[in-house]
Image 1 (cartoon, rainbow, N blue to C red):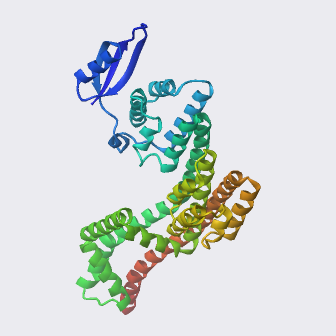
Image 2 (tube, helix red, strand yellow):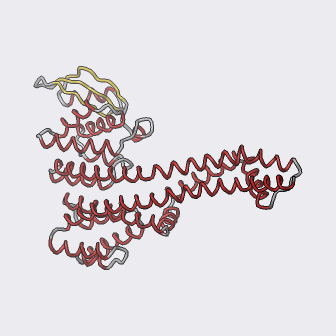
Image 3 (tube, rainbow, N blue to C red):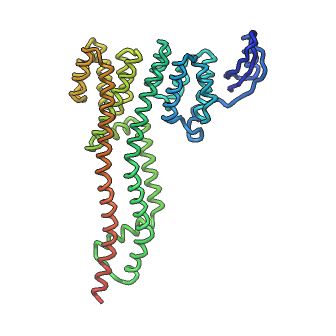
Length: 402
């Protein structure tokens, strides 16, 4: 249970903080041991991983940008970490963020390291995020690290926003097309098909096939929709929970021409951003590349980075030599890494690569969506045309017979 207490120290200073304890007596014992005279002690709800979920609102990437930016600003003007956290708790209204900040304050008051609260929520804060804070806390460079985190998180938010906005129109088209098809095969097509079948009129084979498919879908629409939902849910579970599912998805994505290019560019962008940030924070290069391997997403890039760290750098090779042994990376990347390492500007070059690939990804997504839109419109028109022809042809035959 988490308790909030107010107490007066020997110096007369009023102290307010939160404390994790099993009972009220344990809190009072803690106050006595620290020469604090209690004024009030009340239990409060402990922040948990669940509070960051649906009902807590979640900690979004925008929240992380705000947190890192304002922590950097407060540390720059000389505010200590605990005071900065208290200011943010007072100003934040979002429950999930407020709960997390309370947890940070509780950890600090119990003498735990600052990064511990971030490490306890791996779904919200990545390994890179936690490693940067851990390294900065050890080196006493939290301000600069939070400034870098704010900038990199803002860039990530911008990239995500570009991808999301580019995909909105195609997704809307797919939803509209699906809705039209469900309406046609569930309501319109069965009624028209019954007119012909009940009137002893034999439509052409093409129309019979369309009517048969439409009647089958219309009669079993609920079962078919449940099957589709179960299949999608099963596929998502397999991909998220099993190594085989992840490998299969990776192989499928890598075989789609336009999508595979964006997938690879995203992986290189993540790799460059992660390596640059961790190297600036002073992490050892082998640890930096190992962490970067877990962020890239593309399995062959992950395996290559692990080989660079464990079979290249660990055996005395330079970064450039280790990268050049891996054929999966573009030659431009390996050459730039090798040259910038010799020149002593690897971090800056990785930063430049990250920005370059961000622009490339944005352009590639715009190109992909501009191709998808007419294809989806054409597919939607084709489906409607097939149903229309299936209806028009027998009607035309019927009128000509009369």
